[in-house]
Amino acid sequence: MDTFRKDDGYILNLVRELRYHIKMWSRYFPTSKMPKNSLFSQSQQDRQDHWFRTVVSDPKMYLKEDSDHNLQVLLQGYLWMKLLSNIFNRLVWTGGHCVRRSGPGDKECKLYKTMINLDKLVRDSKCLVAASCMIVTDFSVPGNGPDSVYLPWRAETCRVVAGLAHRHCVDEAIMSTVKEVKSELKSLRSSDDDSIWYEKPNASMKTITLEIIVRRSVDLDLILSQQKAGYCFWNPYGHNTPRGFDPSKMEEDDEQGQFLVSNTAQQMPSLYVEIVKAPALIKYGDRAGKQYTTDQELVLLKAVIDLKYPLRSPGWSG
Image (cartoon, rainbow, N blue to C red):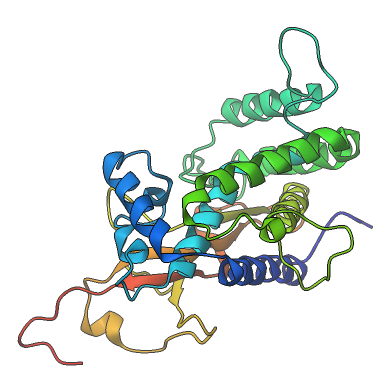
């Protein structure tokens, strides 16, 4: 019996729960009107490096006082982008900066550094080709590409080493992301209340803090890493090249959880993704670690997006 193997339903529940926590966290975020203008001014001064520009091409639509765009949506997209860049598929559960190594030289956890280097060596040696996931594209035999070797190896390795990490170093890596987000959003906060950031030992279970979100993301990443099937988050936002609407992988909701059902995609073909509230979850291969093929990807959970509607032409009606 494979005690590490989880079915899709179990994983979907964890991802949906994470989505819900991020949405709730954005709703309780204490914002004020004045910092929005100062933050937008900052984004004008440094367009390329501004963190919100990895989420949406025009942050002012969400930051201006007179905008009817929902600032919570911007926060959701930003936090998901941060988790994708800092947590998922980054082996944070093995550690990071080692709190036990105080001497000169490299300060990274030995386990973390070893896993990062070994993972890269094995992955690169198998000529894996991918955009955001590792997908076979250059093997003639369906299901017998490098993923059929790499992903089961990675799963078994992650199962063995998971219990060897320094817990304090993992905590340090988690808190590093929490502090990074807190610093980047400081101009947006109306108060210095830490209740939305850090986990409280005696707090109510209803309190959703950023620390809880990051910790659960690390736990989820470990579970995904231990599966022989390939799971990855897919974010359809394209900053330099706007991505068109794809109903097979994306859906738009109304912020009350009701997904919009309409024929606008057929009536207005020039629809583009404006912002991604939550990425899609895609699976490759089966639970036994076989059948990795690019044409058999399974969209377990569609990306939740807001669409960018073009200006209506005089002859358009809908």
